[in-house]
Length: 108
Length: 122
Image (tube, rainbow over all chains, first blue to last red; front, side, top):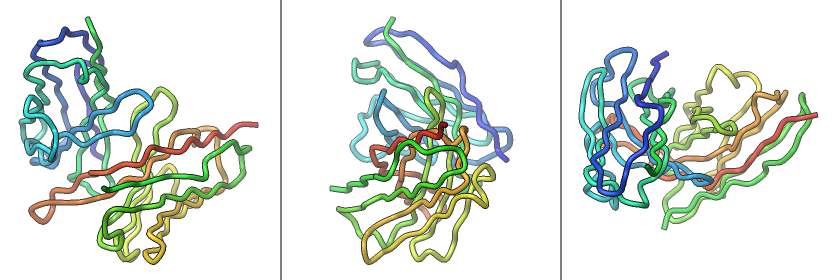
């Protein structure tokens, strides 16, 4: 099975900050990497697919990069509505996908 | 507007059974694969099961294989998860999620339901 790790597990940031979250796969997954945002009590929401493609309707302050084993999600200027938990997910072994453990972004 | 609405969750004793449903609307249900993903309280996301658009291909996570059965009724725009021999560790919010893809192989889960809570406890 492909294992996914994320760092940090949590971070505190202020509105307007640039935030970067890292995701690492246990083997090369090319660009088969998606990012989701989840707010408390809500379903996950797709942000980025294929490592760097922005899902329709997602603000352009979100961006993704990387390939192989190392990936990043960047929020260029953190907004109040961005405080949430972010998960990466590999789709290389689809449909047996696996998620990272999540990164919680909260208010400093 | 795409909508996925789960139902059927509740409290069940260990060893018991439960059937979850997911009602889909706002898209051509028969054209999309579907998935169940669960989230234990305070934990991360775990993929549970996949079914192709025609039901010809089905997969399960090792943790539920032999106990859970996924199915769908394209005429009723509905997805199901039959859960048998339930264990404490199956306690979670269960989400149904639509699968889509681009460029032939880049797959993702683009729409999710609000989830239904399954609690396994004596």
